[in-house]
Image 1 (spheres, one colour):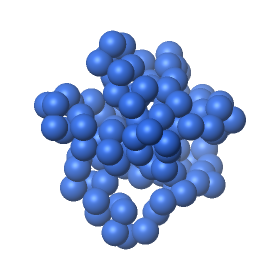
Image 2 (cartoon, rainbow, N blue to C red):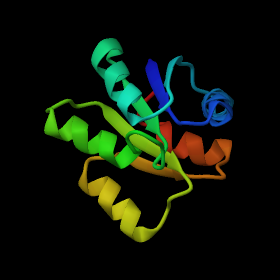
Image 3 (tube, rainbow, N blue to C red):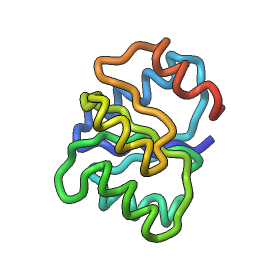
Image 4 (cartoon, one colour):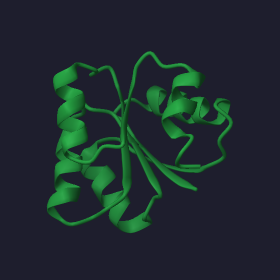
Length: 118
């Protein structure tokens, strides 16, 4: 399983990867520091799953998901973010996000969100 972690924080990318492993999943990780770089990685590396932050410079997570839809690119996509309002969840789901994991997260919340992908 190839997983792309998109977050502008290096520390948060490391935490997300550790939490996926702590939840019991094995993955090959690739990383991107913003949505535009994430889009480039999706096109070049064809990940199986994208774990993406919402708020980032250059291109936000929701803009990345919109760009994927506009270009007809399908990939399992979910958010790992502090943004967890009902409005944001509805917007993310409407654009095809499979889940939204709210920060701070636990290995249990990560397991519950990811178990159907591994």
